[in-house]
Every structure is written in C-alpha cells, then in structure tokens.
Image (cartoon, rainbow, N blue to C red; front, side):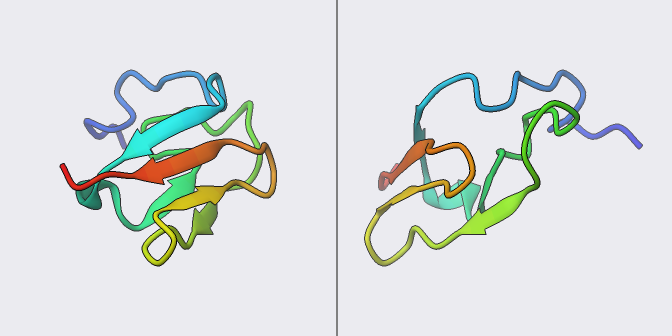
Length: 67
C-alpha cells in the first residue's frame, strides 16, 4: 500500500536535528516519511513535556515548535 507519506520516502536518519510541529505527533523516529529498510526500529518519543528529545537509537535531536 502506498500513501502520501511513503510515496517518496526520505533517507532515514540523514540529519541529526529535526524540527517538528503538533501535527507530527505522536512523534516517532524514524519519521513516517522516512524509509525503514535502512534504519533502526521505529520508536515513539515523548516530546510533549520537554519540547525536545533525543532518539535512543540514532541520537537524532527533535525540537517541538508551535507552528
């Protein structure tokens, strides 16, 4: 099944810093738009309270903004 999110997946874990919005919640790493075949297992990250978090697998830093 192909959806808009995975029609053209981006490279997983290519960056170390990501900015996300409330529309991206619940937050997972890798993001839904990323290909999973070359990445770590999907893990959901609790970003709401601190507004920042790190992925325990790849160390990617996520920041939640109010956009």
